[in-house]
Image (cartoon, rainbow, N blue to C red; front, side, top):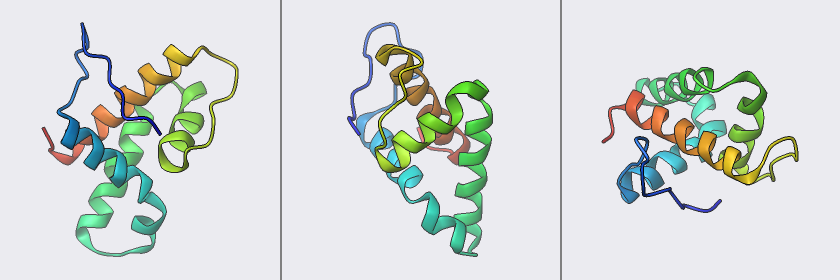
Length: 99
């Protein structure tokens, strides 16, 4: 997964360290679901809530790309995928209280 964020005219831009920390939290989703601690449950709920902020047709592919690096399907352009990827990570960061 590339860690590129659009810089100009982007209201969803995060500091690089916050972006990467949030992306790694999403990558750790499978392990977090198996844990029962309060922190892991809060993170899983934040990821699930952020997925609900995306349009339904992009949810599964954006999550699969961020979590495991699976390539996007060819139903939309690369810019569209990156835009929704960045919004997803931004929503997760805001729900976790990062900024």
